[in-house]
Amino acid sequence: MTCNAAHQLVLMTVMVGGVLGCRSTQPVPVSPQDATGPSFTLEAIPVMREGQPGIALYLGLRPRSFIFTHADTAYQAVFEVLVRFWGTDGRLHYEQAYDDTLWVRTFAATQTYNLSLWHRFIPYRPGRYRLEVRVTDRNTQRYATQRRTVQLPETTSPRPALSPVWLERPTASGRYEVWPGWHLAAGKDSLQAVVELYRLAPAHRIQVQMVLLRFPTDTSAARPPYDLMPAPGALNYLGVWYDRPETLQVSRREVAALVGEARITFRLPPLVERGVYRVEVSAHIENQRRPALSRRELVVHGATFPHIETLPELIEALAYLTYPEEQQALRSATTQREQRTRFDAFWGRLIGDRRKAARLLRLYYERVEQANLQFTSFKEGWRTDRGMVYILLGPPLAVETRPDEQVWYYTYNEQDPRYRFVFERVHYAEATPLVHYVLCRQSYYYDLWQRVLERWRSGQVL
Image 1 (spheres, rainbow, N blue to C red):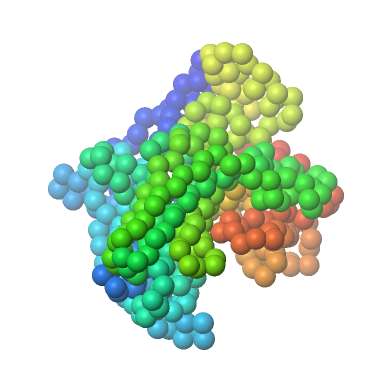
Image 2 (tube, helix red, strand yellow):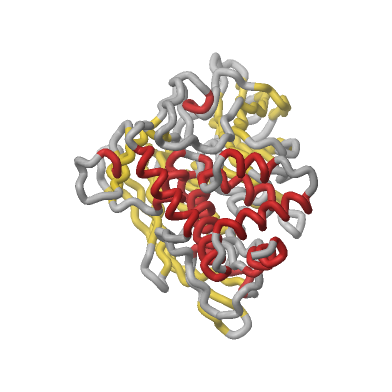
């Protein structure tokens, strides 16, 4: 296969996210092969509305993870949102289901991971609850569940209260809407951090301060499972050095002579560097010894996250399929044209059969983007240990989750360690919403990994 022919192969291949290639015009898109259910992000904000506590619930629905049907001049996906509150005693306190429809105008819009916002305010009495949100695609009955612990504010206390921090982004109309979840693509400018103050009285004088921090973060691709284990204190083990923050911005607001509720906003600078950030908001209330404190972490990824779109991204994500000298050759190209030529030549040499190469390329990058959706933490999911194993071996036969580890089985013989991958959970000294697992590397994975790599490079994995 010539380099030009290989390039045409890439351009004609339909990839997850629709970055390269000609789109199908079929009215009913098919979800990725390894999808486990609807993909959504969750923002659950305990707030008070006119003195009534409740949850401001925001879901970011990813259209590509739903099945759409063609209806007149648009496309629709019917879904259900089931909301439950569980008490600390394990008892179900609240349950409500909402049926709704996600509408998009074009077939292309059904193939995107761009978030479509869904919102409800759910009033409920004060207390600490475990929130459970389940989204079900009515066309397939597949569902996905997310959980949070939430504390609904008291209504009887005379002291002012501070809400959690949330983020908002500008819309095409110029208004702002909530950005749900912890992850966003680099370069999202004009984001603002928002908090609310409750139970205000004219006598209260409050200084509100916002601090934006950035932490050193590991952004490297995972090392092979037979490699040496990283040292427990190293960045590639911890993922984030929370004890080494860099202050990027400090802003202050004064609040006085207000009654009831007040909304405070802070404009953030453009976030262009990948890594973990934290917004800390403190409310210093006159005559109170300790300030009220709320904080929110966010993780900035590549500019097209969770898609893999640009040529440098495509090459970087080949880390698990290429040998070191091949990866070096791809990255050392000095121009975009040369980089494209080398990329095309790599796929041309790997698989001689054009159709087979197209299927292999599609499968690989589908796995990459599914890893982004399922395993993203402080870095993109494909870069994590779980993402690496998922991309080359696919979904495990079974997953066992324990308090400090997760075990993936690729065999029905649970005693065979060669096909059992143990990921230990990294625990941090301070609370964080990010879940990070490190693979317990073993030398006996070497033979399996070489066989799997050869199956990919020869196309036998198809």
